[in-house]
Length: 274
Image 1: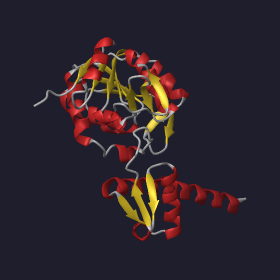
Image 2: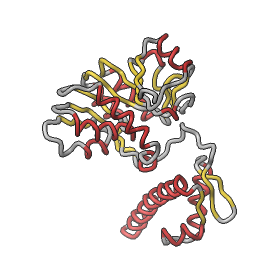
Image 3: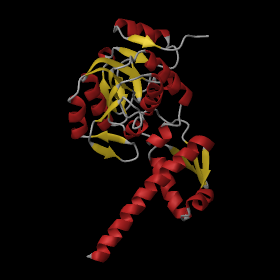
Image 4: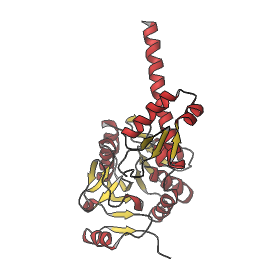
């Protein structure tokens, strides 16, 4: 029994290490656009066969395309692909910083807010902590809880819930119940895709459910989304466009989008063009 238990623990540890290793391989693909099996085996101190299995998994997930001796990043990488948090946080950084600055302009000292577990929301939290006082922030993001843990005068509340591995996000029924038990002035949330017909969509149902709970707990619903998300569709629906009050993005949307926002009385915020 003891030996069996020890083997089980080791297998569990191997699975965790495999997830971390694949996440780091994804980072290298994002940076270098290609990877080589032998190089990765040296870096991670594992067999080449282990690396090939990792690349097969990434190929199956649509993140990479296997090639002779390695893999290249999938240039057709869809925006609705559910990439790990540590990868997403390194993408489109200037755009997220721009969105965070615009969000800070619509937040006042003493506001009650909700922030989702998106990488964009982390940039918002970083900006708010340096510019606003006495905020109450409810979130399902572990990263935001840590980011704001040392801010004097802030009341930071966790939604509770089940930790979704690799995403630093709390999800599940407890998270939904926790978010739904508060009433705030503004909720800020991101998405995987925004489409004229499909509306606001996410990469999986867990994230879609928590964002809906945030929306229905807020007087004002604000979508914070960089321009790469426009005209893309994710797996799970969050809401219709008409359910939004505001949208904050990093550049002026196309005229067709602005007309659509006007039709639904959605206020659009973006930087002034040079």
